[in-house]
Length: 135
Ligand SMILES: *[C@@H]1O[C@H](CO)[C@@H](O)[C@H](O)[C@H]1NC(C)=O
Ligand SMILES: *[C@@H]1O[C@H](CO)[C@@H](O)[C@H](O)[C@H]1NC(C)=O
View: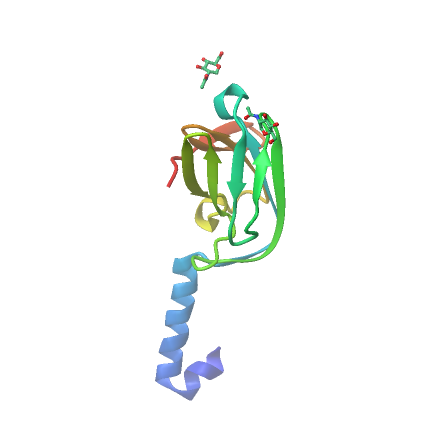
């Protein structure tokens, strides 16, 4: 990096800007991220359909009280948000990003529970739920 700076002022400035953008964009490379989604709609009486288009065009049917899991390795950036997904059940369709590096860097196994009001993430070891609004 030092060499880049010595070779010319503009290169040095560019380097600083790129570093800043990576930081500001919360770009991360994750290794073995597990995302689990549990259907807790209506106390267990509605089917939930989850679609994550960046991962697969097919949707997943999650029966009442059941869960679905994704194992993911790779880049997560504002331009590539693999867990920006759509959640649908009779009469409703919502979106949510289940892995935002600035919010979820504390989980490698992220356990989401989907309820009507929004997704809640189970935190360990306290087993408390942190809930969010649909986007
Ligand atoms: C789920 O069950 C709880 C406890 O029985 C009840 O208070 C709540 O209103 C129920 N929620 C729905 C969406 O039916
Ligand atoms: C959920 O989906 C399954 C499989 O398609 C279906 O058999 C079941 O009746 C559905 N349950 C509800 C509550 O809609």
